[in-house]
Length: 200
Image (tube, rainbow, N blue to C red; front, side, top):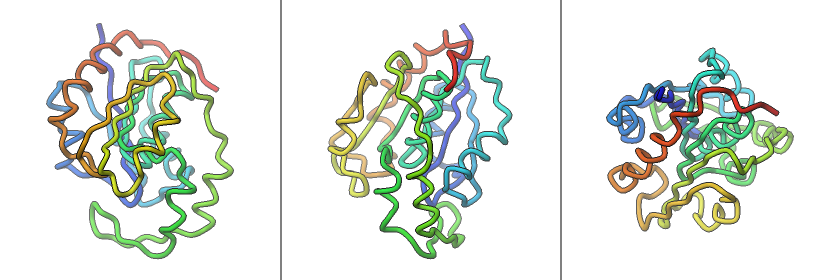
């Protein structure tokens, strides 16, 4: 059984972090890992370019994984391309979540400044959302003490995905020891996804 490659999508105002506990967990579990890096462009176009740059072979086993806005994209791309996905404290309503953050902002990963405009935010209102396909395996992990995206906002969106609600972890969910066994089991079950299930 072929082990899937995990495609990690970082969140808003973020980028590559070689010390990330979450990607470190994936590597510790023995799975190939690729970062989809937006280079400071957090619009739909930015994430699309980041994924396109990876030249993914959709006939191979892949799992999309992301945190916050990256969690939105993990779920979105997984359902669009028929691939399993893992979403950590996902921003499932990006336009609403990001609306308060317009202006010039520092990135968490390197401190560089970027500008987020109302037009950037509005691009999410016009993005043609993928149909959520109940047959595609998904895993959502949220923390009750997330002070960025209330975990209760995510619960109505779970559908047929697995759900883990942790009492703590905040928005970053760096406490991987609390969910690593579940992620390990989920990834182990996805090895048979060796062909693209379809696209929309």
